[in-house]
Amino acid sequence: MLRPVERLSARLTGTRAAAELAPRESGEVQQQRDKSVELVGIAQSAEAGGGFGQGAPHGQLAESVVARVSGDVILVREVLDPIRATLMEAEKSLGPDKFAAYREQLFRQQLRNIIDRKLLVQEAKRVLPEAGYKQLEAMAEQDFDRLVREQMAEVGAATREELACKMRASGQSFEMLRRTHTETFIAQQFLRLQIAPRLTISRQDLLDYYATHREQFRRPARVRWHEIVISYGKHGGHDAARAKADQLLKQLRDGADFETLAKRYSDGATAFQGGKWDWTNKGSYVVAAVDEALFSLPIGKVSDPIEGPRGWHIVRVDERTEPGVISFLEAQEQIANELRKQRFVEESRKYMQQLFARANVATLFSSPTQIAGRPAARDRF
Picture 1 (cartoon, rainbow, N blue to C red):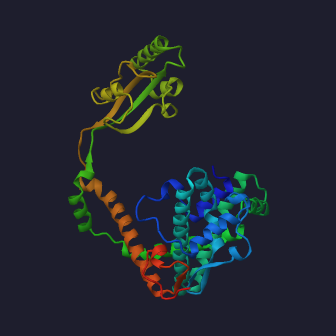
Picture 2: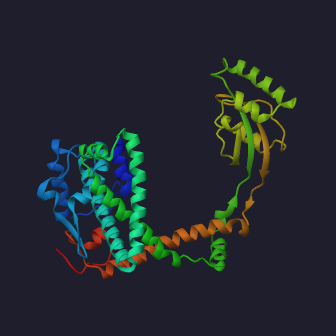
Picture 3: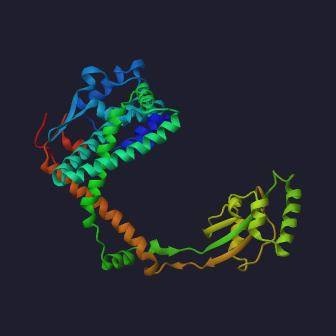
């Protein structure tokens, strides 16, 4: 379990968990261990107790340069500090060989992310008016202040200084975290500004997508409905719960308000909102007998008590649609959003390749493409 200050670091750096990045048994795990990866191993052995649990890389190791990006340097500490908590968790759950491969993969990914971030910040400084860049810096500081206030409340820190002390105790730097957040915020906002003009979606784009993805727009039968659940455990067993359900059913058929009774008596998941369920697809409700009733009851009719594994269910169907295909008019907003997401990813990739091609990027890795997924850099260590 990550401690709160470690979760803050992960939130600001986009670090992903071991389960998401565990190396596949394929060519993805690099066979060569270059100098950069050796630094990761040295950092681990330098930690107190031999693990990632305490302290941080010290002295010459911490200040070792692992990459240069057109004048900016990236230090070992900058790569390792944000991923320390993730590595601690992974070390507990992975065997030595898998952990070593995962550690290398995470190190490479984190360094790639930092290189991208540096390139975007450098480009923002180059092309934006000074006032525009300063505005982004101010917005980044406001966002960081909000996150810090939330974190202070979570860990019980009265001041920023106290929070910084807690972070140092877990091997993190408050000032480095601030700098990382500022750069990340500026990089993300600047990238959106550059990519936004490229995201225009034409009506023909929408029509083409709809025509080639018809299966995606098939809609199963579905209902909107209300439910009251009387559990066996809370009402003295199977028979006693049935007697209670029968009492409520009589009240409903005498004109009582369904939502009022659901809020007062139901043990179901939606009792707090009067037993109301939004659109539910056929076959998706866990109790098969209830699912069958939802698609056979007349609209507006209250069912008899339906026996389930944990209680009695009383349901009322409010609205039902038959299976069919969503029309283009209904689907076009969804299609537009999907196409914008796809185009943003593709255009962002192209834009970053352009920045990388123009930049002087040098790393300690034997091949820059191993770490950045970019064309070979012009400068090398």
